[in-house]
Amino acid sequence: MPEIFKQPWPWYTSGLAIAFVMALLLYFGKSFGFSSNLRTICAIAGAGKHTSFFNYNWKRQRWNLLFMVGAIAGGFICSVFFKNDEPLSLSPATINDLQKLNIPFDGQLNPESLFGTGALDFKNILLLLVGGLLVGFGSRYAGGCTSGHAISGLSALQLPSLIAVVGFFIGGLVMTWLIFPFLF
Amino acid sequence: MRAIKYILAGVLFGIVMVKSEAVSWYRIQEMFRFQSFHMYGIIGTAVLSGIIIVFAIKKLRLNDSSGRPIVFADKTGSWKNYLFGGLIFGLGWALTGACPGPIFVNIGYGYISMLIVAMGAVLGTYLYGVFVAR
Image (cartoon, rainbow over all chains, first blue to last red; front, side, top):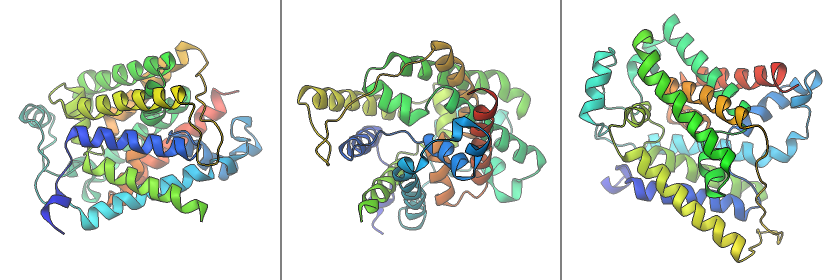
């Protein structure tokens, strides 16, 4: 594959492409919001039998599940055909900060010391599971995630979405600056 | 064959997420440490062009592909839900470096351990449905 396809995209190309995905889904008559799939998965697994929150016609969300399948395929396609051979160009300040937390920068997308299959000890499994739990619980509590609020909601100038995005950042800052030193 | 367009839109989304490096745990850390413009540039460009797109759709009263008007439902609900829900989400976003979309893009990329994050996210959604949304 020619080098140009392997390189990461600049932020403006990426931002425009994300807005294009949102516009594409609007043209299909749908609303861009990824975390609804988590609720749909619960509904398919039968959670609606005893909890009314999951008792709805999830088949109307089938398109979103297909979108999710596509997203997984997109990740796979990138790792097979468009994998960047160069290390990620992370800010030296971040590399330095993470080094102090004993998370060495290895140039990949995600640190091996947290996500590598060889590093999956009890602590890392617990961190990933709890982290995922907070993402799932919080996105439903807030009524959406980064796609539903930060992209779709802010684009439609929804004040609730701005409040949610402010919440995303407060949570992220608290985790990064106050909780990370105790975890790593 | 109507299904294929959603899969293709998802493939595009997955590729964008990887090529923008928005799926990277490191990039999310960089963002929350204010040490690079990269993620702010991505979100800022997406939102600015999104605002123009939505404005144009409303102004020109555009229809979707099946001829129905494109409508934008106002989000209703308590600000507390948005703030505290958002806060909880943010804690998980910084810890795992992934919001719901990138969790699944990362699984496709080959990060098997992101399956644990995905399981946690489904469980978290379930717990919300059982204990809060009653």
